[in-house]
Length: 128
Image 1 (cartoon, rainbow, N blue to C red):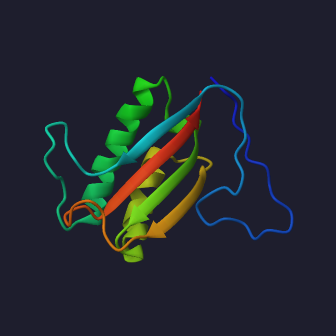
Image 2: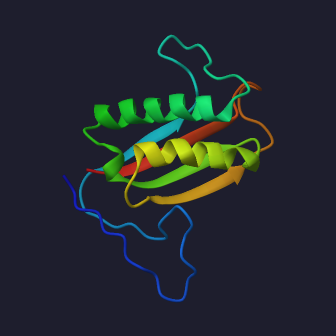
């Protein structure tokens, strides 16, 4: 397993719930954006960003495990949301899956995702 480092960046305001820089050596793992689809392809949590986030993080966890990784290996996440007001609910779920140092992250509000029932999509990059 790789050892990740979270160096402090001088001259940049501290991140609120994310790291500015994460470094490590090992195999690069890219996980495509995950949405709130259950194993049968049915939408979970229609209209509920917290419920969707729970399914999204469960999907991310399964994808990472398939690559021999865990959330402890994640160095970067990108959050695509249809409304930034969903971020507190998403962060609450994220903090249950990633209780320690947070990966680098970006959050982007988009006009729409591939289906109107999808409120968020999250992709992840890891090093194992």
